[in-house]
Image (tube, rainbow, N blue to C red; front, top):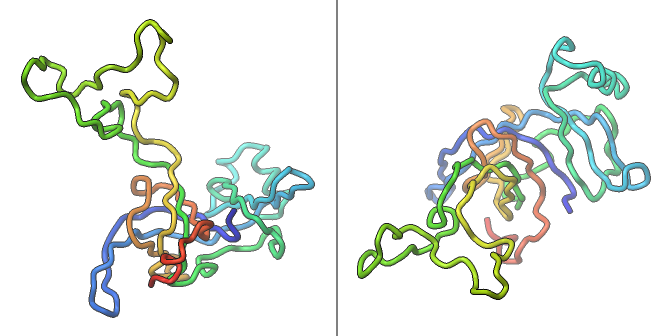
Length: 219
């Protein structure tokens, strides 16, 4: 599990040039400081995590349980509450701010967000099926999956069969992405490559838990 994490908002994609004058595609994340509202421990909650909030919100837009939760912690109310699962929560305290400075340039991270929703999709778009033959007896079945089960035995379709259905809009993690730039003053984090989710999506950035040897040495 992660040792450090932060929450950001996806702004979009752009490109920068490195010292060798090579183009690097990057995703821009707006990373406002996170305030720790609650610390969860294995003794009290069964797992270790930090409950954090970002931004500011007027109390009139909160219900009484939310107001009481922030008042108990003595933390200024934020727009939403999020949980960061961490291995080690030692050194953290309620009210502490976590900024983008916890990451450094060149560090390898895992990024989690809810992917873009694609709506209802067929098997060719959803699972990459090749489809049926274009001619020679194929009639209006060009994009259909074909046979989906057996004969009389077992007389059913197995669970997990790849079939048409809703595509996207699910929690997705991209592992081993590289932090290209950290700008704590502008509250900006640049991640090499693409990050799941549409513009404005909430993104959780954690230090990578499965770093290949070759990836860890790459710059």
